[in-house]
Length: 291
Ligand code: PLP
Image (cartoon, rainbow, N blue to C red; front, side, top):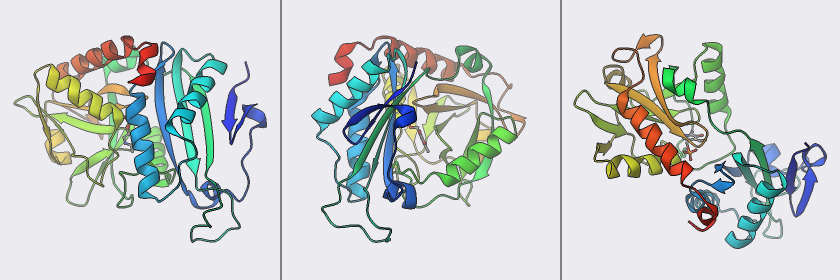
């Protein structure tokens, strides 16, 4: 089955979908994006993704390509046309098409909007049951990691290094040892006295939609939770380490740089949170489009 993409007002087979070579997303990575999970045909945390998209646009002084209502109709149509039951929707907004010049083009240049969909969401449960290995790497990104920009080269380099090391992810750290997040997911640890810790939402990390959902789930379940910086050293000595993300859900980490965390098995807190997150996903219905 051919995938259908939405590109600037048209629904097209993906192989025929094109963007202009002077689109600023292409030339300057002057664009922002969102990836949301579709589960049983319904979106996970739709509203939170749109709030973050609008925030990214605002921070970069980029106009919205469509009203929130029109965007929702486009996303719903892409899910419908691609028959997505379990999968992801990708949306990208670029500043638009203009002769190449670094400064912003005039207000008459309209942003570009691309929406696509994929089947299949998240690594299999058997991966999570065993837990994953990660590597650590210096975080060499810019000072606005809170913006979900398509400028992802440091993230792709980190993920490639992880792939070459046969690891699932690369956990990123600052010169003082603070763990910010991972290349495409948020990083968490559980202290020896069972406090769940994750970096606060500063400019140093992307405020993950899954992170916010898991924070709520953890607090509702009665866990002690702290949003504070932690170092790689603290994580290595922790009881557990895990990752969260739209395509990762909750993923236990069992090794950092080939050294086991605790006893080297997936942590009970991470597995419990994964199960609880899954319960949230399984509860999604049509009503989730308005939640
Ligand atoms: N951090 C980074 C750098 C990411 O790229 C992502 C997701 O792509 C996340 C965290 C997790 O965010 P979310 O839970 O919204 O998918």
